[in-house]
Length: 504
Image 1 (cartoon, rainbow, N blue to C red):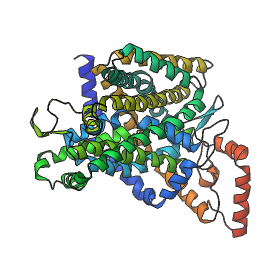
Image 2 (image 1 turned 90 degrees about the vertical axis):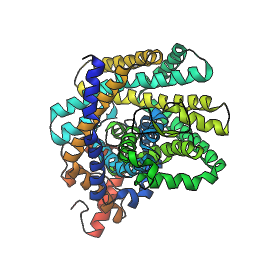
Image 3 (image 1 turned 45 degrees about the vertical axis):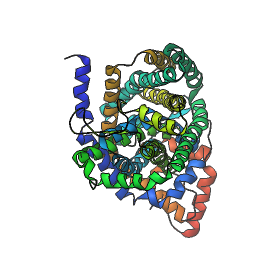
């Protein structure tokens, strides 16, 4: 067996039905145990998303949200949705929505844990699964395994795929050679990444909201033009999702599988990657960033992925594969493979001949912000592996250079091996992180309860780990003293007046 075949076998296990079940199971577990906060606390999500300020050590909640969303919104939001529709039918879109709702629970849990056990390394906050696995469970080898998988997936394999999609779409739309666009992207990336965490956060908070808003606005226009198709479009989504549409009955099992699988890929909820951006945020209580990050799952799947789905389905620009290889249940685009071609064709119905150009621009921004996030995530895991090494800064610079090289390499060549290796890295990250979330569910529940208890008393929540019985969160004592001492005093006075202790 060659390396491609070996990685194919590994991925067949990593991305099996068991993975889909684990993702849904973790989402359901946290949603239930946290009292479906994703409904109850929707106002808090938006409040903490827009509130908060950066500090010398950390970025604002909105910058952390933008960084995580930049990693989530990528090529998968365009090509991934089309693939789900092709192989799962229109009903796959409904199951993407279901996972977005449940996945918010997993996103909250991993973001809270990243905040609890973050560290200050070279004057900046760092955290994520490797950190909270070590400090929360004490299982060092599991933490190291995640960190290694994180470096491989974010520094070596992931950037090549994103760079290839940028270069390929730009070449098809504008005729620009792949090597030219690859070098331009690499230069832009170098400018951002060598500016440190704050520059990444600053660029992300400017690009991500704008690109998402433009994409959603285009969807609204296309939806308005095709308003007569809207009732039948939603009808077929819901009917095929529950096996009530006879034409799609033969692929109903694939409907659920592809919907959840693509939602997992797109939102990254439960994979642990977004939690690394969460750890960098400056907040007075971990629950605040957990709520903000939960909302990013909604934005990614309920807004951006839905925009792609509506553009494709309302215009009828899609195919649906049958059970037999090469057969089709629906074939509206003969010869067009599942992917960006569906979205391009949908846009062409509104703006003839402009589909390729618009998708090229969209993919540039979507993929570039994803690469930016990859750079930050790789840096977090390198910092974990070598935090006590005197050559840490040199190693971090080396990883940044590797990323730049991989961008140029990926722009001129994308191989099955690169895709497979990326899937292996991300797959290992997801398995390790989901298991860690189950092991560490108690602190997550304590944090939300503490947050809500303080709110009920009229207190702006401040996190005191010792009062909650949470160990190894020593950095928070310094954070509270340095940044939130006034809030802490206010909290103590309120508790004294009410004659109680919120932590009890």
